[in-house]
Image 1 (cartoon, rainbow, N blue to C red):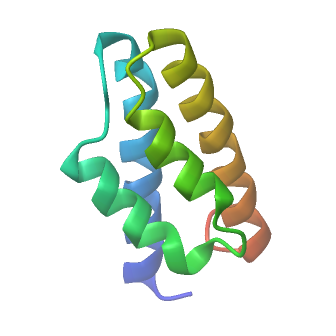
Image 2 (cartoon, helix red, strand yellow; image 1 turned 90 degrees about the horizontal axis):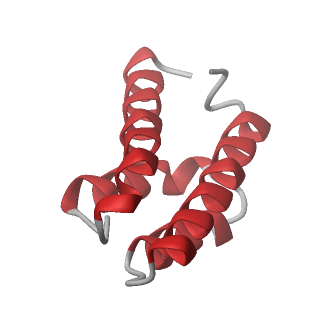
Length: 88
């Protein structure tokens, strides 16, 4: 994998990880989150965790939003590791 791709994937994962802490403050369906998910699209063999993250980020209910975003983040990291795009 190219260095630029690895940096992009690492930054996108960091944006999503930082978003986990913000779920208690309200919806987290922001432009940076959308861009991070888009950057990871090509590296996730299964798309469901990316879609689930975005849909969870839009939820109004704090507990549902937090649980959905956390579960889908774990799924995203698993997919990235499986594809070899992320080792963190």
